[in-house]
Image (cartoon, rainbow, N blue to C red):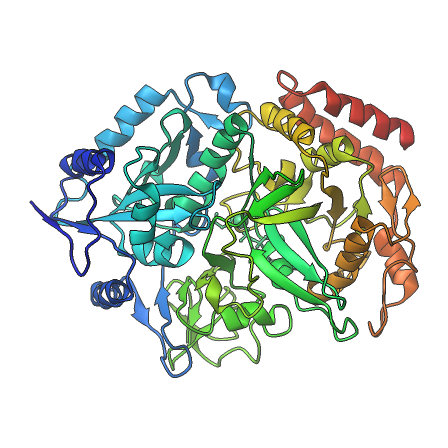
Amino acid sequence: MKIMAMLGTCNTNNPAVLAWVKEMTELCQPDRVFWCDGSAAEKEALTVQAVEQGALLKLNQDKLPGCYYHRSHPNDVARVEQCTYICTESEDEAGPTNNWAAPKEMKAKLLGMARGAMKGRTLYVIPYLMGPAGSPLSKVGFELSDSIYVVLNMGIMTRMGRIALDELGDSDEFNRGLHCMLDVNPERRYICHFPHENLIISVGSAYGGNVLLGKKCLALRIGSYLGRKQGWMAEHMLILGVESPAGETTYVAAAFPSACGKTNFAMMIPPEQFKGWKIWTVGDDIAWMKPGPDGRLHAVNPEAGYFGVAPGTNLKSNPNAMRSIARNTIYTNVALTPDLDVWWEGKDGEPPAQATDWQGRPWTPASKDKAAHPNSRFTAPMVNNPALSPEVNNPHGVPISAIIFGGRRATTFPLVFETFNWQHGVFVGATVGSEMTAAAVGGLGQVRRDPMAMLPFCGYNMGDYFRHWFHMRKSLKFPPRIFHVNWFRKDASGQFLWPGFGENMRVLKWIVDRCHARANATETPLGWVPGSRDIDLSGLDGFSAEQLEKALAIDVEEWRRELLMQEELFLKLHHSLPKELLFQRELLVSRL
Ligand code: GTP
Ligand code: SPV
Ligand code: MN
């Protein structure tokens, strides 16, 4: 076997890294080992190889310079929660909302599956850094993968290569990640986390959150576990800055479940009437947050790119995303046009007269199936985003003034409310419910509890996670205010009550003004709600104050049902639920 350091000098003397790569190489028995250095030349060479192997297709370079197309296996198009495990010593540590397996047995099983699994293939060693260089919050990981698609995606989504080795130095503190595609068989698919060992093993998939191990596996599941031990928080949150015409920038973090609007909100362009207001994107999916010396909660985005939902993305809904994906982007499971352009449901313009769908079948507008998979995605470097925050590489992160929770709810939840205090805010986050989306396999459209949008991503017992949230208050002299929003409420005819997207700026401005104690609100059983005059509707043609009132309304009958639904989660977690949550529930019941 030959160990190659091709096209670069990304070798390392770190003994812990070398020992682990050697051990895994002996286990997986690849024909070649390729150490990634993250250079532009390397990216170019690997892209050529990926095209030769058929893993990528070169798109129309006049229209989409540097862009490539990928189709995943039709059985492998989303995260698989039923195959995702937290392997802690005790089952109680993983808690009732996670799949659990004993670490020793699961490791033996997975390493057994990996034995000889890379014969005839290349093992790519992917060193990567999550978070800005030099940040106390940043973490180094190594993903060993036999997928060239994973390498090219990790090159966009993380700070990959030399930079990670430099950050690590001689330390043995890094995440170990092993990824084997095997035969991409759902029966042999496991995404397993071993938090005690800072280890991830993923087999049998080649798609998104299952295999880009820095993202959901390290940055959220392992991250949340480490955060609790080390006094910080790993959250499924976007981070944005709101700059006012006076030049004051207020930072906000928001947790919405998968495919519920984080990327859109993080890149929003304010409507014309909001002259001088500007949104800066820090991150669109994940926030690592830690109390700073100033007593405020500081957040960094551990990622370096966007793995975003394609359907519904267009120049009106998300112009900054369209600009972000105009070059150097990998498209997965969208439709392909005859001139090698991409298309998806909800893209600008007319649907193409003919196209090839995400499964490679001929498609026309008369076809009954969708051209793009509902969970088709783009992988785009954040530097493409015209609204990228100048603070994105700040090792100290940005100070967060507001945390927003939200879900996809056709009824019950008003457009926006502010919670009374941190404890109440934690209760509201803990009881978030949302309709399930295509981002995970199964259950589409059903409302389920998705606490803090972390149900699929919390790496330990959810009850202890809530306790950690309450505990964090003690290290914050200036805790962020906590809000809840719902862009997805519908009227009797099934139409969205609120126009959403860029118009969400109107709600965001109220939130920011509340943080600076300069906006009015009315006390309700749920929290502080703006009156219809407190939200600026100027220039929003065809949208009346009455409609806004409908979007803001609180229906006590609906809330009785909601309380019963919330109880399900409380029962499931009764063993580990912090008392503060029961107390908050009693308070809500009595207010209602
Ligand atoms: P993940 O990447 O899975 O974590 O998703 P996300 O939370 O970043 O969601 P994203 O912004 O990609 O939006 C998902 C879907 O919701 C897209 O189809 C959007 O068009 C739609 N969406 C986003 N914002 C709004 C909104 O304000 N109103 C409505 N009605 N739909 C929205
Ligand atoms: C999500 O599902 O929340 C995503 C997409 O951001 S994935 O990376 O596949 O998890
Ligand atoms: Mn996400």
